Length: 138
Image 1 (cartoon, rainbow, N blue to C red):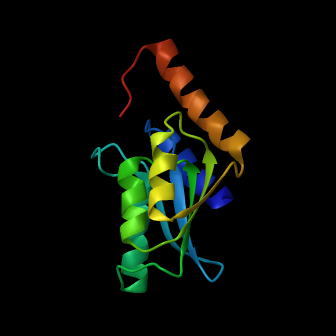
Image 2: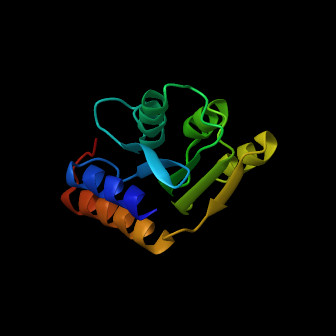
Image 3: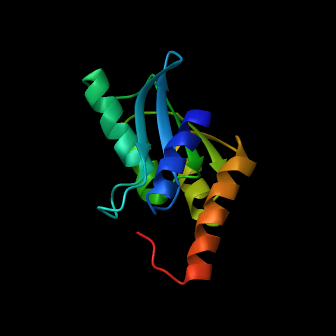
């Protein structure tokens, strides 16, 4: 999870919503990702899945686990589901209970609260700085 937070920090430093993700296979990181500003579709989880697919030369990541600094959105949960991963570990909880309901229906194991304080603080700091400056974020 600490590696995912490092990715989130890079997003923060580049004025993007600070979410980071890593995918692990046999205790080895096989994919990294972070939110980027060039597309609304480039969430940390999506970039991470794409990197793992390239590194492992397969679209099926059924032996892998993903670690994300914030509870994944619906789009990302579905991408995780399609990639055949069955375990998601995340830091900060989303305000939307819809994601958790979706996970239960699709039998993806989900565990939250890992380094929750660190993950939440990075997100809070980012959004507070934007509100103070009244500046749009990417």
